[in-house]
Image (cartoon, rainbow, N blue to C red; front, side, top):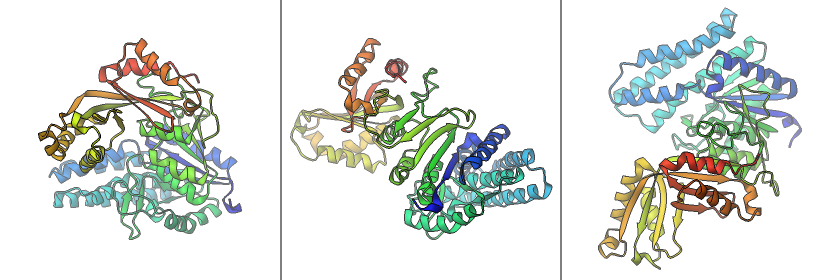
Length: 473
């Protein structure tokens, strides 16, 4: 690591962390404290809580011809951002300057909505231009507030930093091009002792067309910038005390997991844990950067530390349990499938054509059936696609039927210690059996970091609680 990049911290604040006056006061205190310990601090900020959803909802409405709420939405956005500025920025000139920049963005936003209305279509490119407006407003407000409390700060649009491809709504960064821009734009600000306040979630193509990194992509933004800057650490500030052993809304006694490996976090993110964006993990792993997940509203809590794949982390064999709800199992079965090559490949090619992601697959060793989970709302569309794909095989009775189950839940237990501990699967099934929870399908990755089980939707609470009781923090 080069000398100029030592002692550099990247902090990301989510929407709830900048949602109101009390939350922003916490952010100010956290940034001030960080600057006393770190020579350089970069802040990545999300849109104010609920703003991105409101922006996209309005875009879809105007695409359907309903322009009636544009003015009300613009006024509401103006009022929310203005209230934060008035609470913190006493100097009138500074406040007016920030409000002018917000007003410019609001007028751009209104124009975008009107353009969508004229076209009668919300294209992915247009949606990305709309969706990023929340971050662009929030960083200007936050930078003005930090300056007002004598923390030198500069708002920076990530469209000037993060170079991506043109995969609108889920863009992929070009790390080399991004590094060049980060060195050009951010390094001079850091050299001046300033705190760059960078928009999360957004980037731009090499031609400068705005893109977004996918929902929850502000975490990804922080990781990309941290990797480009060779930062020492990334702190993700959210509204819970780190990564939890389970969703506290379902299991009120859920606790913070003090330490997890990258692989554990990747499994948790994949199977529905909401704290970290799945793509966040990769640039941080590759750069060997330490990651912490902390609570803006309880900053003294140590939160969760994410480490590399440390050898033999056996403190707590099972670290956490997650639930993916609103799933259905699709089954392709038939005696004629036995030994016929290409059935699985054709099955998932047909599923891919529907644009559906498959979180879990289970195949009988006899090769007479394949079952896999999909979001419940996609099930009928997938069954139709598979019936079309295998029309000849169904006619010949090589495939007997293709069907979708009632709604199910995927429960996943995660813990890297499982691969060194015999009998974990037995404990998992024993705990569920003791509560009368029937397992419909199972899948265990070759990494042995997780075991996933499919149960009936009505068994969610009982199954989750039974598995959570196996966790020893």
